[in-house]
Image (cartoon, rainbow, N blue to C red; front, side, top):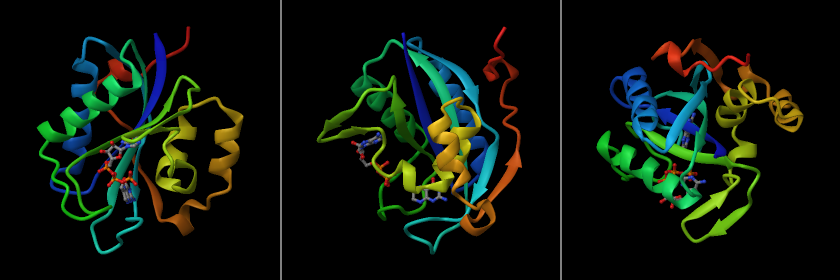
Length: 168
Ligand SMILES: Nc1ncnc2c1ncn2[C@@H]1O[C@H](COP(=O)(O)OP(=O)(O)OP(=O)(O)O)[C@@H](O)[C@H]1O
Ligand SMILES: Nc1nc2c(c(=O)[nH]1)N=C(CO)CN2
C-alpha cells in the first residue's frame, strides 16, 4: 500500500459539487482509499489570471495503483467530469494532479513526481501542509502570506464524514 497526495481544483460551474464528485470518484476506485481531505480554499487564479477564482483541496490517499495507474485514474475522472483542455492553465471543471507518491521521485515524459510546480504554488502547498505532518511542507507553507497570495479558507470539506481519517 502506497501513500499519495493529490491536489484537486475547480473554477467552472458548481465548483463545490465538482470537488465532491471528484473525491467520491477517487474513493470509488477499489484500489484507492481516501484517508484525509483538507478544508476547501478559495484561491485567486495563478498563471492565466483572466479567469474565475478556484476552489482547491488536497487529498491524502492510500493505493495499490502504480504512479502511472494513479495518473490514468485521475485523467479518467477529469474526462468523466467534463474537463476540456482549451487554454494552458485555463478554466477547468476539475483538475487532479498527483503531488507526492510515497517519497518517490519520478521523471517520465508524462509524469513528474513530486509535481514540478507544487513548491511555488501557495494554492497547492497551503492545503497540502494542512493535512501533512511533514515539517518541510509546514516550513514551505509558512513562507506564503495567504492574503498576498489570494487564498481564503472557504469551508470544511463535508462531502462525507467517512473521508475524515482520525488517528486512533
Ligand atoms: N504529477 C503529475 N500529476 C498530473 N499530471 C502530470 C504530473 N506530472 C506530469 N503530468 C502531465 O501533465 C500533463 C498536463 O496536465 P494538465 O493539463 O492537468 O496541466 P495543468 O493542470 O493545466 O498545468 P500544471 O501541470 O501546471 O498543473 C498531463 O497530461 C500529465 O501527463
Ligand atoms: N488558484 C489556482 N490557480 C491555478 C490552478 C488552481 O488549481 N488554482 N491550476 C492551474 C493549473 O494546474 C493554474 N492556476
